[in-house]
Image: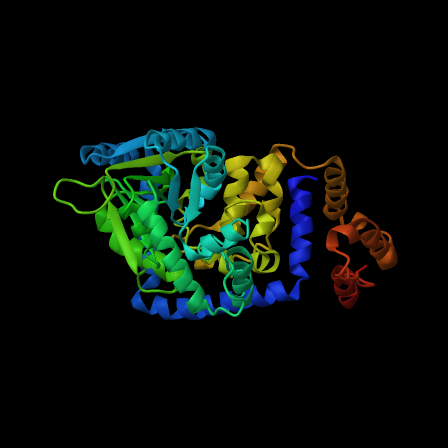
Length: 459
């Protein structure tokens, strides 16, 4: 079964699962309420979005310059930088560092880039225990699932689902409340933080002028993951660069508002290297892995490079009617929703993932809510165009569109056959694509052109 066929199969199951839809609609409606309140902190939200967009454009257009500036400043403070061309290289370098410290256990905060490179699997193969410390990630790890959403990994689960998971995997009482589960996880993880030899985190932003890694979170687990272990490794995509620490005032708030509806998240940290003399906590060594993994290919695309402006707030997922129907796991990518449908084919191959760019209504709501003004629905169209240019369509599809084009280009051809024949042809050739549960539109007995001509006494 191809990736596209798996997507269709999974999507159909989720779309017609009323319980799945109920959970997603409820969770997204709660998010929507908070975002409305969060946006009130901006006196001019559109101006803030314009500024954020301009800063990301500046950063991506000068990516090489800012990455080198970041590296130089980070190394000055005792940090070490590893450049990784792809997932395999990143895995190998990370395992190499961990082996040097005789690491047996790693505590890990939420990071989509570690999902992207399948880091947990690589660590497991190397005999290293990797423990997710974000509550949502911890839950989906227990369920042996990937994250459902780039901000809220367990969005698809109800509190009853979570209680059942902990009961089955950790032996907690089945009637545990969310508060009791949280307390149990806190106690369990505290022991792991102290015992772990290494901590691994992602990074929300790379700050070029100070050589800093900015991390934002609500649970404090990332802070603990880097405070106790002797070595801290942070893995960040090269597109996360921003020019200056002065830009953080804008990015902290705009990310928090569009990500969770907050004015600012609870914990915001900027890391500039390992522990120095006189400091009581922090790692003895700190590494930043700068990951490419296809991002340079996206940078080469004149139009689609704008997708690299993304700050991973998840707003476009919550706004997307397709995501709300098919859910996160159907995409078979760490990046789901509209941004995932743009990036995934660009990062890992149009041939395997072009179907994601066609899995959109092109309603434009994703573009409307994006805090850095990425015109996502247009980028999806560019992806579609590229897939056609690369001749990735099937012969059957090409033939169907050829006949359609010929019919549409001539009024005489278009009017031939009458409504009965056209309805028959639609049913014969398009029913499967239209879906078994949807009724095909009926062609009217007379076209608008015919009615207009008759009304004006024209033949």
